[in-house]
Amino acid sequence: MTAHRQSLYFTAPHTVEVRSEQIPAPQDDEVLVQTRISAISPGTEMLFYRGQIPEGMAADSTIAALSGGVAYPFKYGYACVGEVIETGAHVDPSWRGRRVFAFHPHESHFCARPHTLIPVPADLPTHAAALLPNVETAVNFLLDGRPLVGESVVVFGLGVVGLLTTAVVARFPLATLVAVDPLAARRDLATSLGATAVLDPTATSFLSDVETILGDAGADLVYELSGNPAALDQAIAVTGYSGRIIVGSWYGDKRTALNLGGDFHRSRIQIQSSQVSTVTPSLAGRWDKARRLNVAWSMLGTLPMDKLITHRTPFAAAADAYALIATQPEACVQVLLEF
Image 1 (spheres, rainbow, N blue to C red):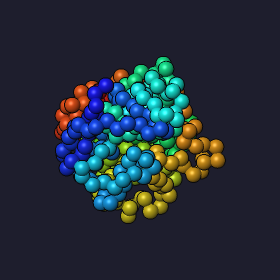
Image 2 (cartoon, rainbow, N blue to C red):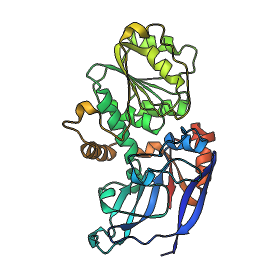
Image 3 (cartoon, helix red, strand yellow):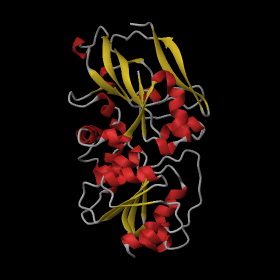
Image 4 (cartoon, rainbow, N blue to C red):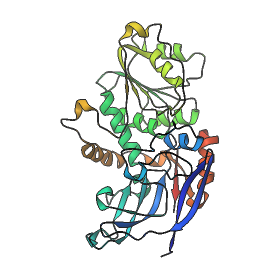
């Protein structure tokens, strides 16, 4: 085995570098993992890539490997799938050779305690396992939104998480499922995943088109997953009386003005943030993160992941992958880094 690993660093806005580092030796209670696939989050990671993170905010306070503050240069990423190649003296040697998922930054080798690793089901392809966080996020959105039989649902934003949310919510016996995105290729994907109608939010007829589809009652449930804060204003406009809006987007330091002086004042619309680091408190009596994760694993094996994985890039060319996502969003959905 080579004595060096390759690690990705965000070094400045719009700049990432792959650096060579010494491979650490696992402590007695750790294992050494060799990464095979790592998935780029085209939503969250683009905020880091563009330098749009609020100053002083932790990368992710719920993940030990990402708990530090954001200051260049730093490592990031949270979707690694690899193989345990070495075990510490106090670790059960049966861990060696296991395929595991880890919420860990992009790098070729890393040490971790076994309890932080998630064994990958034997029948699940490695590239599909790398999308576990995205599927878990989609499951979390449904737990928060609680779609009901016969409801009208709208999904704003058809990145990989929005498309997965569309695919999962399409399994419910809804009246209507409208998927919204400015990119035609993503709208086509949403149709193939079960959306009953697709719309371009930049079209001048957008609001009238929504009314044609949903009628005067508007949407019962809206997911705002675009990452564009201006979309929240459109989400409010299409939501009916006493409807629910689940905001899964993380806007970073981006701001927008909302029109709350019209129908919103009397509409009793509920706007709720949703983030996968926690389970909604109203379900905490029966649901925890372990149960939600098990549901995500079961979903992974039934969703058409190959439709969503558009690019596989050698890790050495990671800078090209980030530039592609940033400059040509119409050309890609999910980009994987291969080691």
